[in-house]
Amino acid sequence: MKRPPSSGKLLLAILKKDIRVYGRNLIYLFLTLLSLVFFIAIFWLVPDKVEEDLTFAITPPLSVLISTGQEELRAQGAPAEVISTLDQTQLAFEDEGLNLLEFETEEQLKKALLGELAVYKRETGQVIIHDPKSDQDRPADAEDIAVDLGIAFPNTFLSDAILEESPKATFYAAADVPGELKKAMEGYIREMAYQLAGYELPITMPLEDEVILGTDRMGDQISTREKLRPMLAFFIMMMETFALASLISNEVLQRTVTALLITPVRTSHFLLAKTIFGTVLAMGQATIILLLVGAFSLENWPLLLLTIFLGSLLFTAVAMFVGAAGKDFIGQLMFSMLFIIPLMIPAFAVLFPGSTAAWVSYLPSYPVVRLLYDVTIYELPWSEALSLLLYALLWVVIIYGIALVVLKRKVASL
Image (cartoon, rainbow, N blue to C red; front, side, top):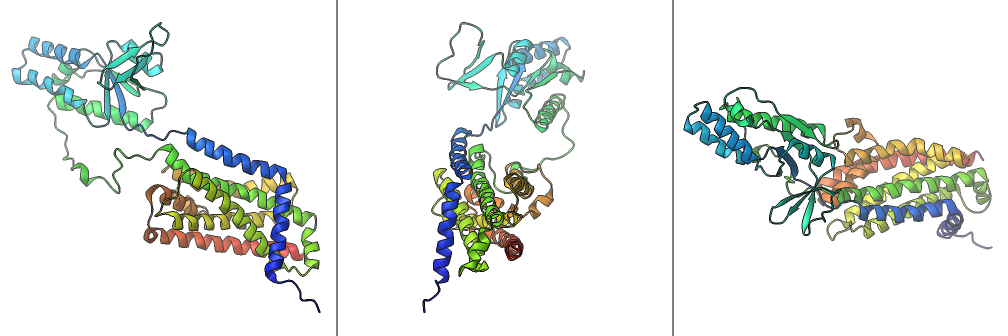
């Protein structure tokens, strides 16, 4: 009597069939290859540097403000020690991370903010203002500078501040400058005016090292390219949900499952094969893309591979649940989006911290996104990653368990 094939052979046969079917689905095959190429191209095109310095422009130049202020104070009969305090004004504009530009007129300042005048700076510190519409050539060996903020002071601003005559200044900001930065610079100018007038702040500020929480990233900011690296792996795993869901949906609609179950194949073989196929497909592509963008290191590769495995298993479970609906292409696509869109939210929460509510951390994909981000960027150690790994595993078990029950009942009902 001939022995029935082993479970291993049955699984291998189903997996071979799935690979052939996947290879014939030109739509998803094309989208998979396109996604890999597109994501990698985007990664290398986005900026890999962070501009940490704020370019701040004023008019008139400091020398004019100081000299005019001193003349006004002398005319008002101010003491010599008061007049000499204006010599320290230069120091107020030399804070770390603040690049000061000086314009002769308010019109020049406004044009620089609008981009109608180009501003360049040589390594020697020389600033060159260039009109792109003129016949002048771009200065050689000079770096392009984008002006973020500007203030047009009256010539008598410094003397008026000291004499408590409420000087007025016009504040300008580029359209893309965040509102909080505008308010910070406005407060900076008010504080400077108070100090010139001889008023001390009513509080004592602590030392800088007393207010920095966590890692001080001054001079070591995370670039857009670095933030994008873990997100590419997440999105490529997520996209495989559509392919696997479509494969399962077609087998349900075309009764391929029924034909398989007539053979020695059992429902458990079918479910396990789909789990293996979906997980390997998603994990393989995520690993490839992380290799191509240089995310792996000697320290993080075991933890990163485990994170990718959990993420792939999570999206495989989602695909099995969606595919059990057995809809047509459009219906299955819309049904997939219903589940995928909420799972995308944590990715944007990590990329833009503070932009979303705390409930985002309760979404199933959050621990996977958090792990990808912290492991690839901050080299998160195992001790700190353990809680997130367990959290991710809990969600995988819950969703995978639901998907198995739903898909098993769907298969049994055919």
